Image (cartoon, rainbow, N blue to C red; front, side, top):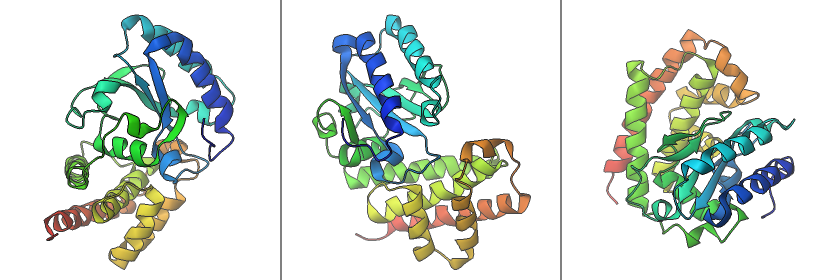
Length: 267
C-alpha cells in the first residue's frame, strides 16, 4: 500500500482489504484510490473513492459477503468508514475506453446496497486512476488502463456539463439544499478547469482557476461554496438561500457558454 495522505484512512482501508480479499479470492486483482485522495484535493470532510479491479464481474454469491464486509467497515468509529464510495471494475471493462456505457457494481457514499451504475465507469475516473491513482494493492493502474486521449476526455466532460447543467436548469436535479448548491458551483469550476487544462483536478483547483479566469462577479459565489465544504454532508438537510440558488443557476448558464467556447476554440 502506498503512503496515504491521511493516516486516519489506514485502519479503514486495511479493514476493507482484509475483508474483501478472502471473499473475492482469485477474482481480486487490485485496489486503488481515485477522487480527491488521488488528485490531491482531499480535506477532512472528503469521501473516499475506491476502485477494486476484478478478473470477472461479481458473481451473485459474492455480493452478500461483500455487503457484510462493507457493513462491518461502516460500523467502525471513524468518519471515513462511513463515507466510502466506489466500484468493482471487471478488468476487461476498465481497460476498454469504449465501454463506458456498461453498468458495474457500485456502492454510493454512505450506502450498503450494491447497485448497477455507470457512475465510476467514465473516462474521468480512468484518467484520475491512471495518472494519479493511489495503489492499495496490485500493479500500477497503468497496467489496466490505457492512456485516455485528451480530446475524448474533454468531450465526456462537456457532455456531462450539458446533461447535468440541463437537469439543474430544468429543476429535475434540485440544488435547493446547501450541499447541492455548493457542489454544483464547485463541480462546474472543476469541469471548466479540466476543459481548459486537459487534466482532472480537484474542486479546490477548479475554484482557484475559476477565480483567475472567470468574471469577478462569480468570486463571492465560489468563495461561499468553498466555505460550505466544512461538514458538507450535514448541509444536505439545510435549505439553500434562494438568492444563492438563483446566482448558481446564472453561474451554470455562464459556465455552459464558457464550456462551449472552449471546445470550439481552434487548437
